[in-house]
Length: 426
Image (cartoon, rainbow, N blue to C red; front, side, top):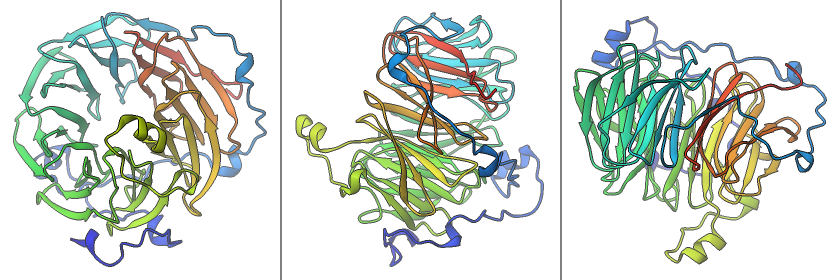
């Protein structure tokens, strides 16, 4: 495998290769062609937003210690009777949200007023995955027992279901009605929806803990509990790059992110390290560590593990500047410049960070934490721009729309909330 040969040096290389846009094959096939063959898909680069100069403004930040504790949300959805584990916004219209919870239920509801559109029935355990497809026509949900449901949004009816082993993650294809999931058995499954035609991708004999389609729609990156990372060719069904040992992680992967043009991937692990990978070569081109400490394999003793290891919980790429965000279990949000592999800012939560998200077209990044708040940071200055509160328990997931005008959160208090993202510059 390419990922196992000599170029496994984990030192950062200032090489233009890692930041250039991958040139995809020409042609403009229909979505039907993509779904049937998973062949050449033309992906537009799109608008990468304002330049760094356009965003250069003076930002004094806010003093979070003077903020009163209050509910800043506009809408509260309260139909769940247990923890709400996951939330997704429909990407086409941003009018609907889907949430899944500890009560074995998933709901599709209207963001503007919280009105229930329909309940997704048939789950037998906590619903831990929920997501709309690229055109918001379908919604998929998965529970801890491995039951996966797909419903058509317009008709509010179930069109497909399947049961796999215990579910770890779920992801929709970027431009076709194709769904992929990972399981604790180590295998990943991919189906055309609703026909159910299936491919499986067999990893090592350990859980497939995280995974994502690449933007070209022809490849996927999957991380595993044993610290390995595999890049898969979706048409051929084979692993094109395998990173393990020195190139992989020393502990289970927790998260993966892909940049907008699909040239780079970030992987985070319980071993406290984050790695930057080139998707063309399968090589490690950057390593990000906490205070320069080398990654270490966690021990079984929970107390020792908590003291020595700070798991990476979430990673994300900025679309408009060469920056990444890394959220850690100790509450640290680290902003790095990927071109120099240097720490730009260290932003601190009081409790562990669960997830980080960048705005689509700005250098502003959101982080949610176990303290029940979402914070908004300016990555240029490292200053806190805003803090959104209202939950009485930890936030377990959140989503923002493309325009960065609406945010939906899911929390351990059994509620989902909608926030209007107003800032002084708007």
